[in-house]
Every structure is written in C-alpha cells, then in structure tokens.
Image (tube, rainbow, N blue to C red; front, side, top):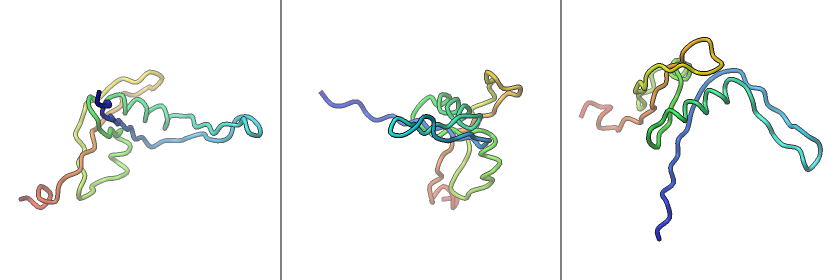
Length: 101
C-alpha cells in the first residue's frame, strides 16, 4: 500500500509569548505558552485543506507583500478571547499573475 500523503496546516499569529525551560537537567523541556501559541493553533485548525492560515494581526504586520495575498476565511469567535478573530489563507501569487499576465 502507498503511504498516506503528508498534509500540512500551519497557523500564524503575532502576540506576546512566554517561553522557557521547565524542569531540571536532562528531563527539562522547552515550553511555549500564551496568546501567540493558542491563536496560531486555532488558525491552523481553520484550514480546510493543506494551507497556511494567518490572523488579521499577521496580515496587518506584513502589509502588502508583492507575491502574497490573504484570502479571507471569515470572522470566528475564539474561546477565551473577548473579540472575534479574522482568519486568512496565505497564498503565493505566481509571477505571471502578479505581473498581470
């Protein structure tokens, strides 16, 4: 039987992050927690196919990049957040499409 194809969904968000080592010696683990991790996980879950999904915070920070476009997925309520979040699929625009060809 052929192996299952690799499916990748990634989420991007910009926010404060707490990170560091938990434990001591060889049993310590590197841990990351906070809004950045939570929202990136939720963004990745919004993908209905292999995709990179970014929050509005990322779209705002990046601004206009010549070969990227942000396709709106809509606004979603997020548990633990007071405001709804806007999610966008990040797509690469081909050179031909970008140049109007």
